[in-house]
Image (cartoon, rainbow over all chains, first blue to last red; front, side, top):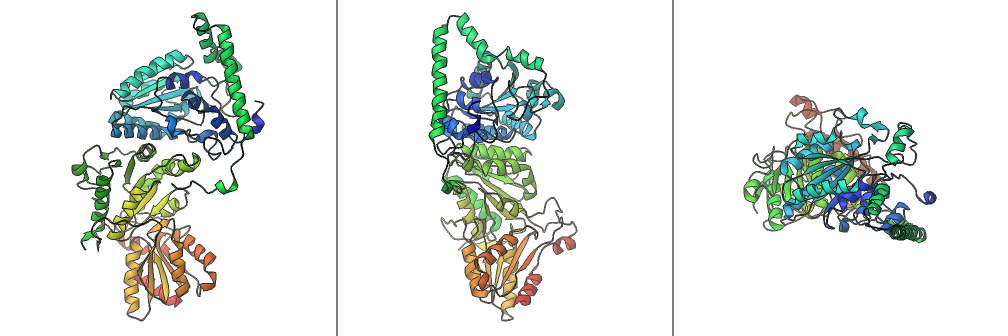
Amino acid sequence: MHIEGKLTGMLHLYIGEEAIAVGACSALRRNDYITSTHRGHGHLIAKGGNIKLMMAELMGKTTGYCKGKGGSMHITDIELGHLGANGIVGGGLAIATGAGLACLLKKTDQVVVCFFGDGAINGGQFHESLNLAGLWKLPVIYVCENNLYALSTSVKEACAVIDIAKKAQSYNMPGVMVDGMDVLAVRKAADIAVSQARNGEGPTLIVCQAYRFLGHSRSDSCPYRTKEEEKMWKTRCPISTFRGKLFEQGIMTKSEMEELEGKIERKIEESVKFGDRSPFPAPEELEVDVYA
Amino acid sequence: MPEVTFREAIREALYEEMQRDSSVFLLGEDIGTYGGAYGVTRGLLEDFGRRRVWDTPISETAIAGVATGAALIGTRPIVEIMYIDFMTLCMDQIVNQAAKMRYMSGGKVKVPLVVRTQGGVGRSAAAQHSQSLESWFVHVPGLKVVMPSTPCDAKGLLKNSIRDDGPVVFIEHKLLYNTKGEILAGEHTIPLGLADVKKRGKDVTIIAYSRMVLLALQAAEELSKQDISAEVIDLRTLKPLDIETVLSSVKKTGRVVICEEDCKTGGVGAEIWTQISEYAFDYIDAPPIRLAGKDIPIPFTPSLEEASVPDKNQIIKAVKEII
């Protein structure tokens, strides 16, 4: 929060949904692809993104992922297999499907994970893209991050059929519902889907039930959610619960955890300093890279 | 030099580029087995097989988006959108995604996508199948817009559009498919962003593109019999616009008639005339005449359809008005 003065424009935080990005991306190789959303910081980090470049981009600096010209919603890192965050709801659905088609044509066994929210389910691109993927058996894993609300519109108010995983039947692909607050559950489902895609068995729809702890964006104080509901979901914080499991099963000690979290804090601080000392793009950059 | 139809020239370009570069592939409705609604892709499925020629369901948004995604990771898709009127269904992927991804990524990605489509009047196809929407795409930064008028130009320009590393909207005209013209033998490409003086003259500059070029040349022919020497410029690429060729001509003649099929208001002609007045104001001897499509949905009945766009006689009359 203390850095909010340095961040401009739109910001859609991923807090609460971490298990989805981490569970899904941890099942992928570096050269597999993902498409992301307007709420994509978690996807970028989970895919192995560079925090410094990310922070610089959020600050609009020339050292950022997109030279300061894309911002939070358009971060792209092709080398990492990240085909772009997207400011259009559902915009990544057809793009991911196309990347899947290209993997098929190139005869590689790469796969594509397409992240999108419950807000994208009712758009035409969802229907058209999943139909093509099911028809052509494309190696795409469609991961729906169902955080129950598209800005202020709940799934119940938007969807004629609220069982999102069931919609997979329309597209001849498996549809599974998963606890999106449990990173191991997401990972398990992703492993199955990724393996199927790699083996030429086609796409899967994975619906992860989760919750964004904060508002849609900075200006949203969530008047459409009850405090009780928010409180309940916060007790299921994916990071806290996973941390608890690590201790229970003796995989990490508390001091090892503190050390790790200290490292992460320092990394984040360094990224802010990196962003701080980086320059904004020069005016000459304005009309560069419109055309290839 | 061999003579082929506009349709065949486009098919040849597709064939040659698909032979040359295995990453080039086609997507579209009815393009495979059926050979395309206007027969352009006939035979290509047999030549290249189903992995290079994809028949799609009616899903324009997904088709455009799938092509965008495929282009992002190193293939060169060519999408056929059956009618430019259906581009409305592709707009998010073409305008918000393909056109902008390079800039938004800070120059990191490229989207070497070609969208081939056709428009224009002449088949009594009525309002939803006869439009000329090129100005919409000219208006979007990041897109290139190409509109050839002859088989030779169509072939050379399409080859280069396919080789271009960014998204190109390649707009054909339904009444041009059967027209014939000589093409150059052997490998031949034409740069994008280069207009062509189709007929040299000194009294007036007629600026046109696509089917209007043919009408302009017919008008110029008749005018020459009346000792009026008209120079006809075929823009060929609308974006990037070769304003230099236009200005050279205007500096010589001082008089301009613009012939376009798209609706007059907010059409391509408005942009051309504005640039002429910005860069060659001192050379202009008369106000411009913009002959353009009427600001109406295209009517069905042939007589009204014909009257909705400029014809040869209107061009002749316009030239005489400003000489």
